[in-house]
Length: 262
Image (spheres, one colour):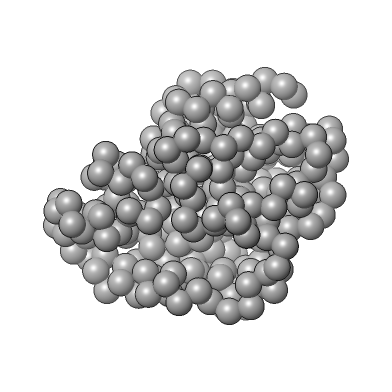
């Protein structure tokens, strides 16, 4: 039986963290220790990412991945929980809240994908090149990323604070991207789709985007009309596509605030 890789730390109300495309559970390292002081933090690896395999025929669209996660959470004994999702993980979280509002206590979306009026119909060539570069260089990433020029190439488009990112975070991200068998299947599953469903006002929602998100730019990938009117929308200064790296205190504060509202 297929099983999503998962890790659980801390105690308290369950809080599920869902990473983005080409990432894995290590994306949450900078905020997990603090969250674990209040919550039981559950991190997962999506199919074809990190330690999770990619079975043949696996449906990789956000709605299907959301149902897959619900099934696993039930199997692990979690019926209702808070959800935090990054990028594709944020889109998955939105789909989960729309599909089964009785099980999602609160939703925090960090630069969620799917908020575009006109869906993409083909792979973006720059991102495809980035994936190719990561796949060929990730075995030597621990050596390369000790050099400033290599970190700039790998992370300047992701984070305006790339120079101060911890080396461990950079190495983990390079390894996750380079080894992700689910990267292109997830990407292809997004083509032609967007998030456009209703979510119950009973679920507190916070959406956070960095003010310099080059992956999902504000001009065409941050359509506010696609999220519920009751959602709080926050733009974080000096942050890119990974607010949990660039704005650790602000992200923690928002998670604590929204989870306290339930």
